[in-house]
Length: 265
Image (cartoon, rainbow, N blue to C red; front, side, top):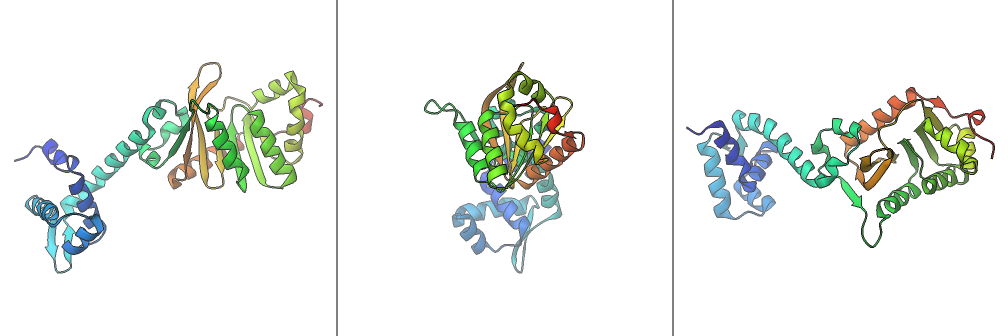
């Protein structure tokens, strides 16, 4: 009798077995439809189905093949593990750059994320990509520990000139920065007047933008300040739901930025 590890290896070592079993689990399939949908040869498919029947993972029916309760139980555990590995592989070295709050997410939700990193031709490529998405968005919400002047200028123009739905939460340290550099306060007076900014009295451990239904997360290392290595984008609904909930939590704990808190320009 095979050991439990042998049973796991039976699936893990064959992409064809995984594809066939997941397809049958989703809906009963005939041999012909499996061959067409999976672009698999008759010989390969026949061998896979024979192995499944010997292990009591599938059984033939009048409509084709269906999975057994044993197969369904295995897939319930195996598929999330497989998707987690896909997410980790997609992240690559960026997994070490994720801000702490993002580690609460199941890594499988990152398997379709896009990551933009600096290049020799354009070291600012992550910043350019973020600006491109913000400029074209209808709605924006930001949760940040700092404010990039280029981003502030774009968001202010979109708020004042285009009346876009824009708001954000930023940590209290912003006010000290503005007191030391009053010229930068001009844009923030517009945000305060529009009721578009909240101040969080504490540390914000993530720099994140919710741009329409897309989540942007800055990737990097933090000592005294964040050293950016890249930008992660995701439209995965689990990531979107997590980001919206995190933003709402910080906003509830924040106070509106009032004109009186800002230095005169």
